[in-house]
Image (tube, rainbow, N blue to C red; front, side, top):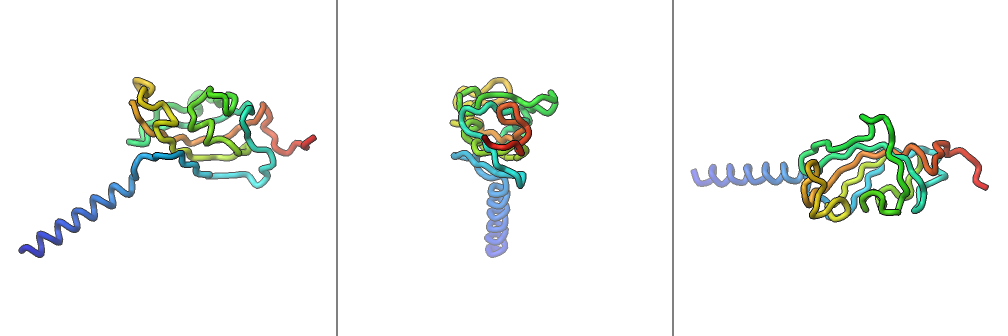
Length: 147
């Protein structure tokens, strides 16, 4: 009977660990996953570029979607590296080419930190963004000649 109890306890512990590992802990560093990069990637983003990004943002904790440019049908335009967006974006969207898709897992200190963005983003929330670069400096054609 004692062996059965020990085996059941061990099995339960393994199940708990597998479940926790499958979801994973909130990121403590920016994680950049390149989902797609066009073969012709000669022009890449750098600080100071005006970029146009389509995105969908979700909470890391439970996957709740809190914002998306796709429903509006218009990408977000901003100057990369200027502090117009969260730090995780200013860092995670560098060296991207038009048409590239990335998944960013952003720790809370590179997102909204302890203040959050009530009511949709709680304090200290890690975020996940699916992003696609639509244009750099208003140009969505990466095949132009460099001068």
